[in-house]
Length: 305
Length: 305
Image 1 (cartoon, rainbow over the protein chains, first blue to last red):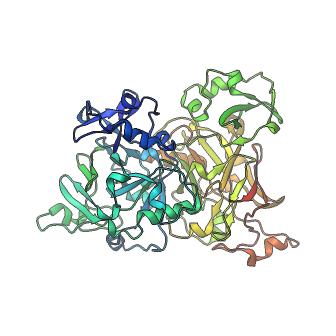
Image 2: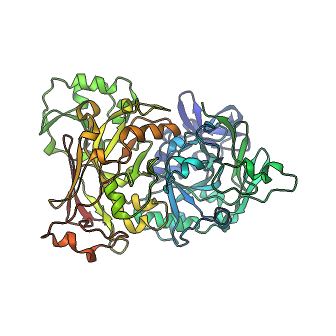
Image 3: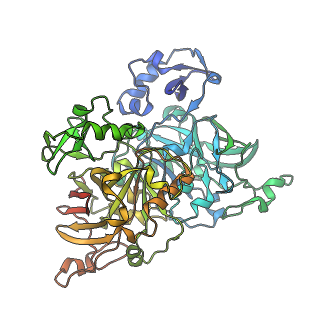
């Protein structure tokens, strides 16, 4: 099952995707469910109920007619992992403790939905505004002291995430702080794909394209710490909440092709780790994060006002 | 004006404190206001309306009869500052960039209200569970690119905050991550004191007591970066939201008195920076954060289940 959120006037409505082009509104097929995905996840039978209610339904609304939105309204936690792919560790030259996930938090306000514009900071503030294509995990039920073996039972599903980062601000101090939390600097979507449909994350791969050029590509089994390990670790510290999101970290840049002038020109880079094949996000760009078997998160980049 | 949130059955209700012992329920005196402080702050005249509605009202409910709760339900951001007092920088020996606030985020689930128990982690997980007494700032209205001069206009008010920290987890990697986000490891309250009543933060001081012994005490003008600078800095990156909270950092430990066996015994400390006068929080302790002219945040510490 693929669950979307979309703009419905000033409100956010939920839908279930029924084919490549269409969806049904949750309010039409399951009017007794709340119009809020976290609230649905908080019901023990919420997802199962929604699956049954949409099982044989034919979508009557076109995805192309609506603006998708982030499908989680202010979750308790939006975690992200730093340095969880060997290729990204190598290109930054930074150290991480391989025994524990390297975690920080982001705010809801730092994300938009699929198709919505990502905001590039004013050039006077920062120019090293970078994509980070990632798999993101959405927690489906409460749990504490969850073992690695049981951890995937606590996952509702997965989505694509662009963990857009403002490097100059990220480097102001050791804690990433504001550099990972600029307004609308990241995105996730296009939908939550439930875990039963996505299957084993390690069998998928993630890639990032800027203006059609593939800039990151990695199998998801290349992660230092996998989904189950991170979910289990977090549950040592607090009771996982439905709707908690975990962005699993980004791979390194692909080496630029011989004819890729932009990818080879390190003089165009303003970040702390000039890297062949890295380009910053700039107004006018189209950035895509694709996970095979899940979908494509596609966002235009525009200048922040 | 002092605004509280309290448990009302399974719901959270709001009140306005009218004297040292009593309060009125917001639903009684201003039934057309939402029972949610962030939603009140989101109304342009929300606080002014509430002030007028409670101006000459005599409290009919006793504070001692209710359980106070955190007065912000899942704000967009709960920021906290690392290393913002010179005395704390000195005792840790750590570096910070004095030009920029050293910021990280916490989740709503990591905080309880005044009087509620703070949870000490299982000793098998961590033993260096530390108080951090702080001033916290609550944003009252939306704003972007706010100058330092205008920044205090965006502050709704202030509260006491205990930024309880699990040092072992904080040190797992460079980003503090889970170590600053254990379940119910911190607290804030007892109320939001509006900015007009609190006045200039720099004229106040903060202290922390464990079981009656003062362990931290510092004037708030000892901060590396003040409230206005931090609010202005954050607004460079994103649009401040009503209800965003900023914990302004903690001072160093006071030197232990000659008869203070516990404060002098570094062998009882399990954290990375053994410090005379520091004691960890343990089940059975009573921890208090007091800001003069604002109030006392008092929490018992109990063992996490």
